[in-house]
Amino acid sequence: MIKLFTDSDLDGVGCALLAALAFGDQVHISYCSYRNLNERVQRFVEDHQDRESQLFITDLSVNAEVEQQLAERFAAGGHVQLIDHHATALHFNRYPWGQVEPVNQQGMKTCATSLFYEFLVHQQYLERNETLDEFVELVRQYDTWDWDENNNIRAKRLNDLFSMLGIDEFVKQMTERLQMQQPFSFTDMEEFVFQIEEKKVQRYIRMKQKHMVQTWIDEYCVGIVFAEQHISELGNMLSKRCPHLDLIAMINLGTKHIGFRTIHDAVDVAEFAKRFGGGGHPKASGCLMNADTFLRFATTAFQLPPIYHDAEQNRYNTKEHHLGCFFKNNREQWFFLYLNEKKEWSLWENHSMVASFSTWDEAERWVKRNFAAGLADDALVSDYLHQQLSWQKEAVFARYSEAVEQYKSKR
Image (spheres, rainbow, N blue to C red):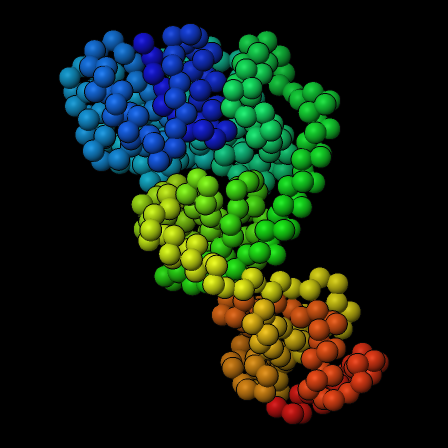
């Protein structure tokens, strides 16, 4: 008997596909998460003490208790092979049955599918071919997010297809295609559906961006959003659109899971996730939600207003304007940022001096991180100056420079 425990994402299912190609009907596959992996592996080990059963674990790692049971099984002559690529699992390399390799010898980021593929080929369970090479590389690029840097949209579309079909249908269709050993491609119908799906994902991201809040958790400025779909795309895009945030936390109340994403090299979300019993990659990780994390993330998010995002089509209130510019947040706090006589950017809240900065970027980052503020919309600036100066609204934009100078003189 051959038993495989693997993750239920594209990378984990990629391992299942390779196992099915290598072992056929002999392999029994269980798709797991960190929530149920330990219990399932423990039950298998206790029920299958014979040395004939082969046990594989891919794209996941077990806790300390089950780790000890696996070590005892191996020491007694039983089969164990764990293959993973998460840095938080590196301690398994101390065992002859553990292979954890986040980066290969060529300096390329790995995934469980790519590591398992090399293992199966080396052990002569599988024969390498161009179709499998291409499929495995697409999985690797998606899982490591190299596709974004390489602009390899085919890798993303493979995951889109996986999301649309679900595990069982995806495995069925991919098995048939990989067995044909022809160049890997998508059908015309799939390409059409991908375009529709892409528009749907973009709408979902825009909606979630409007709902995102921010707060400080330990030393990090964190964006928090409730999300159930498109976690990788959502986390990456929100990080790019809000670079002042150190990381994004995406809460799935249904699965009781929190995903963490960052685009910053100085932020290690794998280490951040370990504080809450989770783990993963330096730029993509997660943890299960318990009472403590629910309070720190979910309860906190419910009590905060959304981030005020930068107005995108302003004509008057624009960034680094020579007269200065207005920021606001959803707590109705107003901030004015202008270049003073010392060539420093002075930040004022209403008519009180807050701080000064040597560069625009420092000033913008500071007001966004500390007040969840964004560049105010022209129409709102007009209303604000109307109230502050007692001018007619139509006069504000007609004499905008004069209006801003008069506002500055009231400091």
